[in-house]
Image (cartoon, rainbow, N blue to C red; front, side, top):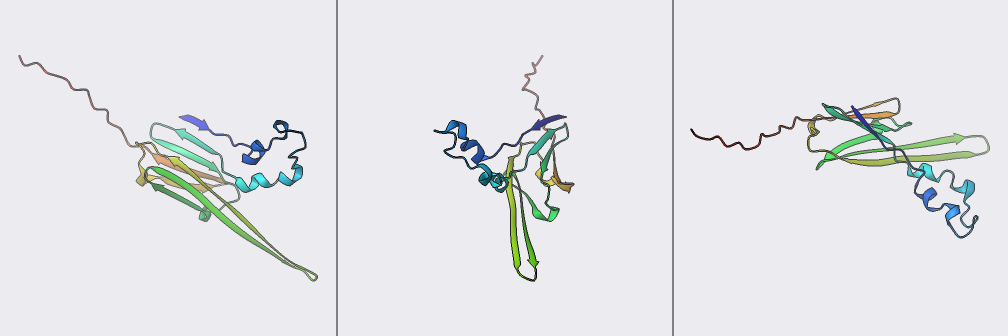
Length: 150
């Protein structure tokens, strides 16, 4: 079984606004103001493994529940998306506080031709979404052979 790993990056904004590559060292010094911005643009890391009988995709998605996921296949593309909304209310004697939290992502994978899309299986366990994509056997046709008549 082979394993392909894609490591996450620090985010679009942290790569673009690197202070050492701009005019002065404090020109875009966001400091603590930018600390939580990467959390808004989270795309889960994926591990993709291939064996002789299937492909396996694992997405690291802690904090979600299995009801938050939508896994779809259309025109040879597997799309995994999730959306979670939370609301917290705090009602004290002198004040009321209401907070909203939204978390979502969408990730797509182009499927190989030998994937059996009717039998894809997805399970969510301990913060990891496991997707199994079975392979169909590809028969290799023998080359044309001419038989001489005796």
